[in-house]
Image 1: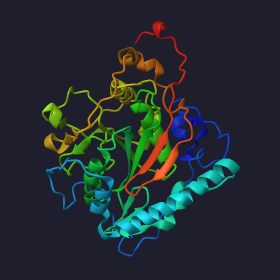
Image 2 (image 1 turned 180 degrees about the vertical axis):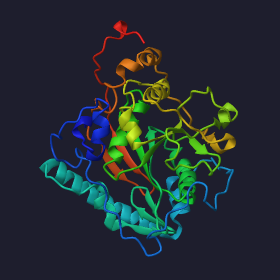
Image 3 (image 1 turned 90 degrees about the horizontal axis):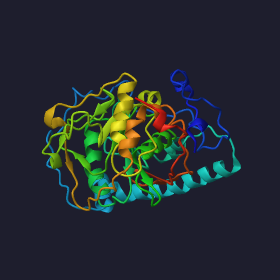
Image 4 (image 1 turned 180 degrees about the horizontal axis):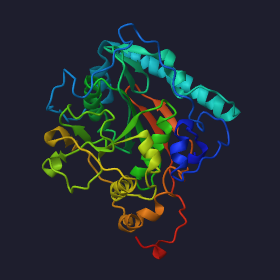
Length: 380
């Protein structure tokens, strides 16, 4: 998929002013076209007109969480979240996977135009789970109030299968208590190349917009678990660095300009900065490059106060990706790449979309891109 095959008409004016190309899609496949946004289900009389609490009005938060980061399984986490509805949820998720696969296959191969989004396909499967409306694939909407924010949680991922159920067991109840509409997307690098976190962030941004029009996107390392559920994941104060410290750093930051692990940006901000760099293969460098992009378009970052932004890091089976040997050179020339490397040059194979009860998995085979610039002739 190429970025300039995707048209978001509501954002076209913003992007054209930033020099990001606007070209017509080459076909009308559901993969190629981010359609008009999902049709909302009917609101109950209790929900109509009632807005969910703001960050400052929330009740029922637990404050500091005594996180149990011991190993668990997805099956156990499903039972923790869904309780007596677990079997019903699993059956509906299975049925919707079949329906989704048929629809995507037909549209992708017949090249037929369709106004349906992926979310349209899934809407008939909505269930009431406690005080939430649940859609297979880990999309949740408050049932008793109108959410202030629609938040996509994007998790760049490979080989952290032991971490994922621990993370989900903690993050889903926290987001429920915060009364947010949210969806969880695991963006899995489906090859043996060095891990490219930032490129997966681009994929997650584009592919999640095929579901609904998210207000903001939180890019979340799967091994970081919030210490305090007052760390509000709504779309305020963006760009936002949600972390003020982690246990492995003595609940401090490595350095003040650090902008990694858990970050958030609005949809418009991500378009404006041309997404994220695609050149960082291996560990390190991409978060500093992203911070340079944020600053260059006139933004600063916010953080929670003190212990509100603390995180605990899952320690078992914790293996970092090999270091990116080219990260220093790549970072030196971030400015020359800024508007030619990101959303407007990304190309990747059609991803494999699989709905799970607690999240949507998007497996993608990303490859190195050719970026035609002369580094040696460029001076910052």
